[in-house]
View (spheres, rainbow, N blue to C red):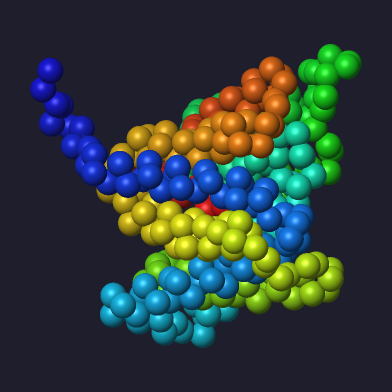
Length: 315
């Protein structure tokens, strides 16, 4: 069957790069579990990830001949974005630590509700609209959270710690705030390149999370090849490479395809938790996660341009 002339041709090379980026980001919670809480605290892990990752992005920009200079207003927004990203990562790490039975999967699924929060802000604050897809997506996500919270779980089955559930949801809120702040910076007339903006936001995140780690007296020394491998994986593979693959290629493919490929991240994070850490989900939590993923997908494609998709939590 020939392709309809009204439908854009799919750049499958870009789609493959998006899928690769999503799969690399799916490794993030597995790497976090390897170093949190031993030998690193949640904020200390965030510090190492974003400090090394930010320097890697800066080096990448310089090698490509891109300027890292930003105006004072953009610098202020980059710092604010860094504060939000630090809150996002620290709470996400805490959620993974607390939800020991299924933290890599459920904490990541909950964190990706940022798509729904961003869509809601776009619909009701920025007047971008949302339509029926957003309404159904929000309802699906809320119902999914209720399943994970145990509202439908019979007595006798294990549940999710309430603190872990709330931290996972808060992660989504802070990451949505981070994305909206970046978007505001990118829409300024003097906006820098995306790499420059992410470099400064990453380094600001490192400063904030470093202060939090010191105030909380968290262990910050990385010891052993396994711990260093996880930290470098988070910094170089997740924070730098995977993010670059997504931001460079998401705008080149249709929004629906991009949103579908991004769901590889929470899906494979959940499967990875089961395969490598023996995490166990009840059937009710699986149903809840599936409903949240449906809500994320609908939120990502609700009244958006056909060739734009939003990046997931670069966790």
